[in-house]
View 1 (cartoon, rainbow, N blue to C red):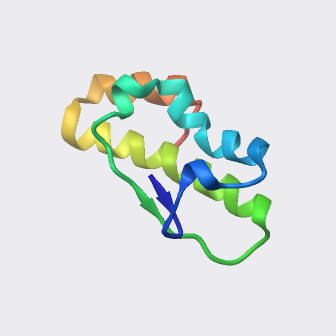
View 2: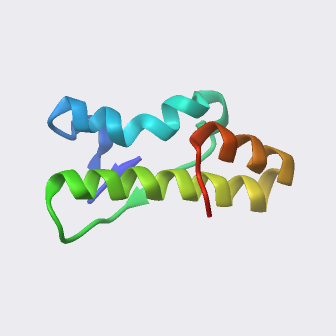
Length: 85
């Protein structure tokens, strides 16, 4: 996963990196393994960008599972991530 052409593992400070990783950590790498993401974010402050990235990852995963896997997986993910769409 890349954010503004930079691997997410290089995002600093570390505490904000974990905020961006939250949806992935909640789902586990098993469900996330076959998804590749490139995220571009502009404007706002750095912290606001991290929270926007976190929300976009969570919503993208829900949409991916709804379209390519099945509706039941989507419901499980929404409950796990506490997402409302």
